[in-house]
Image (cartoon, rainbow, N blue to C red; front, side, top):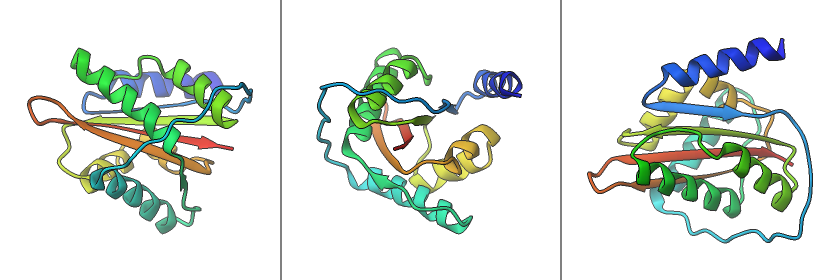
Length: 163
């Protein structure tokens, strides 16, 4: 069943151009690294609010923001902008960092590109089975970043963890 789910997620990611997601099974580890601070923009807070509004509307718990998750999301957006491609490159490294720094057991990620608002981004994720699975996943905390490239296009990374 797990192999079938991995194949489904791989196919979904391959077929998806404007949005993408990634998730992982539970595991834990710890280290002496420290969590990074992050200052959210209004747009990012809107995205996090939209995600929680959706989760509550389907009977799930709202997630708590952890700045370090947004910091890692921001690093990924900077990378995607630098190569002008929406992807999950480096997901395993981000996952490992969140496991080591925050004690995350489960880690998931949704990315998107070129949506005009938090509402349209979350609506697109809700309409994609693999992204929706992350939105509705068994998580406790999250973070997000939205970066705008030189052409005015928005890059979104929303990461989820379960502590």
